[in-house]
Structure formats: structure tokens, C-alpha cells
Amino acid sequence: METRKFTSRQRKWIITAGIVLFVGIGLQFTSPAFTNPPVTNEIAVPDEVLAIFQKACYDCHSNNSQPTWYDRIAPASYLVASDIREGRSRFNFSDWDKNPPAVRELLLWEMVNTIEQHKMPLALYTWAHPEAKLTATDLTTLKNYVNTLPGRHRVDTAAIMQPDASHTPVNTPVSTTGIAYPADYKNWTIISSTDKFDGGSMRVVYGNDIMVRAIEAHQLPFPDGATIVKVVWGKQPADSAGNVLPGNFQNVQVMVKDSKQYASTEGWGFAKFDGLQLKPYGKTADFAITCINCHRELVPDQDFVFNIPTK
Image (tube, rainbow, N blue to C red; front, side):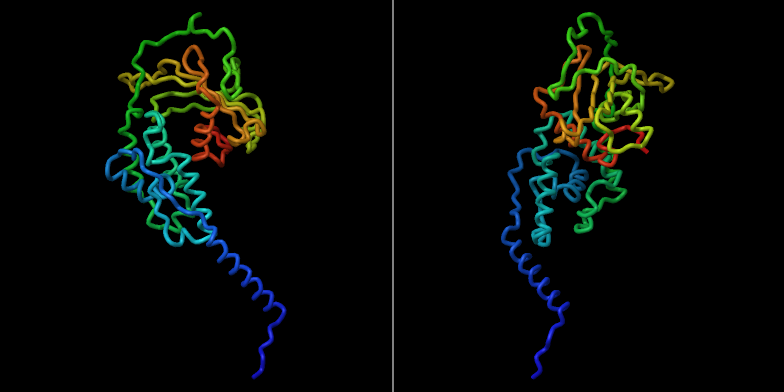
């Protein structure tokens, strides 16, 4: 019987296939385990809304993850485990009560925004799990629900408070992130205005010269030194003609680009100064993690900046 001889190319393919098979089998022994911590306080929403979240979100954003058999095969299992860790760190439907009410409402609005912009569920996830795809009817159900939330109808009915000497800080306020209140922002360029439906507020956004030049040049990512200030007021009830005027001043929000100092938050430093006394927000700098997590959800393609005309 004649012994078959393999060509050099065939031998290379056989050796390569053997190595891949050996490594693949070895990876199965180190594949990450999937665990579901106890559910402490599941989100309370209408049944039809909960069913949508369970279908499209729960595998990564809850303690009720249900990976399929093919999700557990390495190397895919490493990606799945990473997505679950990341998803739970952003928000978790199974410990929903850890978030203050205002944050819960904000997260629900952002979920609807990410779904409407086709950023969630992830395309790779729906490719592997086609049952998780959301329909136009699903999106309408979610929109109808968030429009019933308290913030959607919040208006400022308090008498307008004007700043006086008692409300003027003696020293320049400084955030726990090291960002000082930019008192000269009113001399900057207004680059956009927004109406925030989940919080009943009106905003005007200013940019310093570095930010404005970057916007004009369509420069992304934004250069170090670019700074944005968002000034927030409440909204008064609409008058008989439908006009809505600003209510009381609420806060000043600041984003400063410094790719080295703020590397852990995508190169952006965050600060917020509340009320007429401009009290720095946050007991520690950790609040910036919450800020960037929200920005990561919706605007990675705009260097994590909302409401800026970058195109």
C-alpha cells in the first residue's frame, strides 16, 4: 500500500490546525464561570416594559443572566463574561434601588435613547441572540412608559430667586475632581441649547476658545484644554400661548479635556456646582465615573460629549 505524502503547504495547515485545536481545548478549561449574584431589588415597571427589558437587556444588565451553551465556549465566553461585567457596572436591574430616584429616571431615558439610536442591544449580541431584537412596537411601548415618569412633567413653580451677597461664594469653588468654577464662562461662545425631558430643565452650553476652534475644524477627539460649561435652569409652566420660560437657576456643569489627568474617564474631567452658592457636587471624585458611564452609552463617536455640533 502506497503511503500518502503531504506537501509542505499541507503539513503547515495540519500543524496549524492541530495547534488551534490544542489551544481551543485548553481554553475550555480556563473559560470564565458565569454566576448570578442574589437579586436585591428588581426594577418595578409595568409587565409589558419588564418583558422588553428581560428580552433585550437582562443578560448583561441584571443578576439573571442566561448564557446559552455557545456563549460558554471559549474564546467567546471571555467576551460574554466581559460584557456582563461591563453591563452590570453601568446599571443593574437587579439592584435598582441603589440608585437615587433621579438617577433611575435618567437611566430609563438613556436606555430609550440608546435603543432608538440602534446602539443597544449591541449588534453582535442580537446577531448571536436574534430573539433579543427590539421591534418598533417595543420602542413605542418604552417611549410611552418614560413619558409617564415624573421628570417628564416637572415644572418650576417656585418664586424666582435672585443672587445676592449671601449667595456669592467668597472663594472660587473647586470640585473634588480638581476643577475650579470657570467664572468667566459667560464671555465664551454659546454652542448649543437643550431641553431635558427627563428632568424638566432648560440648558445653555458654552465652549471656550479651544472647544470652539475644534468644533469649527470638526476635530475629534477634542484637544486637551477644551472646556464645556452647561448652565441649567428649571422650566416654568407653559403660558397660554405655549411659551416656556426659565425657572430657577439649578447648577453649572463642567467638562474639561485632559487626556492624562483624566485618563480613567476617557480623558474628560467632570464638575458640577449646585445652587446660587455654587456648592461643588460630590463628596469624592468617584461621581465622575457615573458621569462618564452615561456619556459612554450614547456619544463615544463624539468624544463622549452631548449636544455639540461635531458634524
